[in-house]
Image (cartoon, rainbow, N blue to C red; front, side):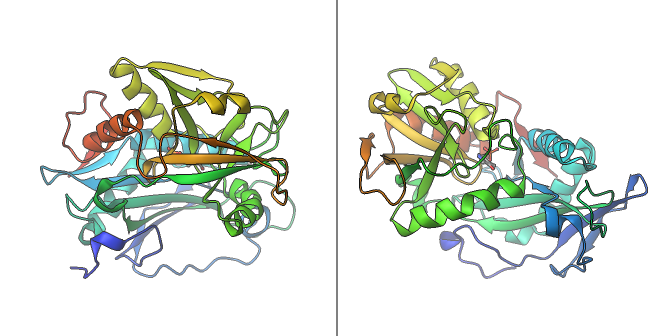
Length: 344
Ligand SMILES: *Cc1c(COP(=O)(O)O)cnc(C)c1O
């Protein structure tokens, strides 16, 4: 057994028992190899190291109230990595291989799966990289698909602590008609500079606008945006947004409890009318946002501040949605959506 303290896990690398690897070569995926060593041998000329031939996923495994282990919508992650791989022109694991590796990594690292009640979970990081040596710019022909995991925390006691964000009008995370809707590492490389700068100024997140007109909200650096107004759940529609599985789930949950869902353009000025605003993604499901500063440039002293529900707690509508999703994930609420995949 591990001697981890489940209460202060945060979101960081922890050595677990194993990682899983499968190599694509000569038209097929190799048998899955389970490795105790996280260090890999890779050719220095591999395309992933030079041209970002890389895409990844993020999903979680939960220890339920009934003791059973649940994965949340892994098929959606499989389909999404297949779409990202297609964009990069590389082979992707099929859905069956993807899900079986998700289950295997959880089984092999079950002693790192946080117990029910800790509000923690196990984060899975499926990763696909170009592996063959190459010099020319082209899609890799040989790839390595890895299934990695790490136990991660949640906000203590499930209390959702609000964060702040900044609209940095002098930076984009994605180009118009570019890679914004694919889960590729390259998008993150592009966002680091503005994130670091915003962070140094005291902001916890960066909210990016649509890169073509800079008038509409796209998403945060690593999570989608939603706003709540009256009985409506409002989230942007844009081709440069990563299609979040959490957002997709929140939309279905919102509809199921009689909320109106609007997926449409969201002008920046509309921020003034939202009662609650949140970030959504696998890592924490929902992070309430307390305020957003709109700045013409990050260096500028000029700003328009939009404030939302509270800087201390999550708004009631966001909390209701959060409780339903996490309730399904921990097996506290019946999953009427069919989102649960059990790990036997
Ligand atoms: C992964 C990711 C999200 C969240 O997606 P989920 O499927 O909900 O985890 C949102 N935005 C970006 C840029 C992402 O990479």
